[in-house]
Length: 224
Image (cartoon, rainbow, N blue to C red):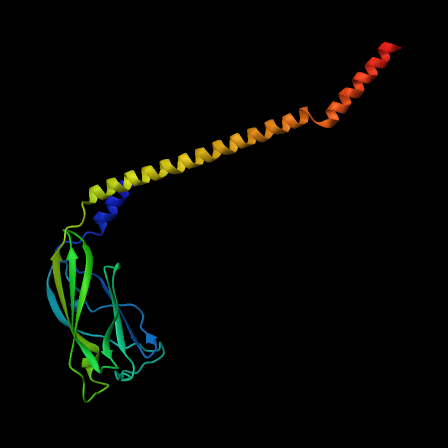
């Protein structure tokens, strides 16, 4: 098990400059798009600060072939992002219908150790209230994305594996003890029931009457 976990750890290691896979999903007008890959130029590179302009597509019906990019200004436009298939930024508002503001900048900070991303956090910056709204303006579905990296050493992995091993061993010992104890109690209970049954059988009325009648018969034979 320990070797298996070590192999998994090595498989998912990043090297500086490796591209971190990024998926995005958009929500608007009670619809959501399927998870799709973010453009390569917008994906982060491991331990490499960068920034770029992201333009996201609105969700549409599968049979809708139009290229109209107009939004419903009465409904929010949201999106979610997933990094490395394990770290999620859920439902960020890209256009706020009630406030009539749109997202200007999304800053994502990756906290990492030597070869992996441990956690992420994000900060949002919105523009001022839009006075004259153009539902087709690309800025409503576009923003600047900024990637930052902070070193944060994860707990020592071998130590974590050792703790996991001893925890599993103690859990197994506890399970075996409970199983043995339950079996022992069941065995004692069964023996007790058998013993009580034997005692009842030895002093049962039918046995006593039978013995008494046998004694009477023997006495009659003696007198005769």
